[in-house]
Length: 69
View (cartoon, one colour):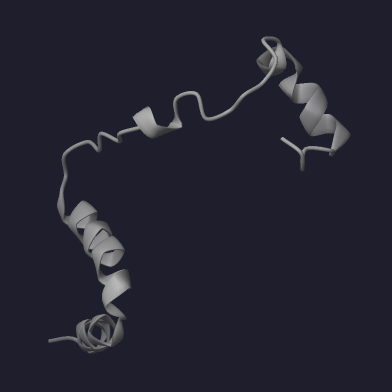
């Protein structure tokens, strides 16, 4: 095994249990060549804004006052 693989094994072994699942997904994604399909349904309706918000988005960004968005 290479030095980098050895280090990776050591780092994975040192991970707290609650961090294993996200790292496992990341590694699996690297091995999988198929296109990723993300479930964005949880984001639908997440932002409540005026109907013309998209049209005015550049104005908001230019003003630099986008902390309240």
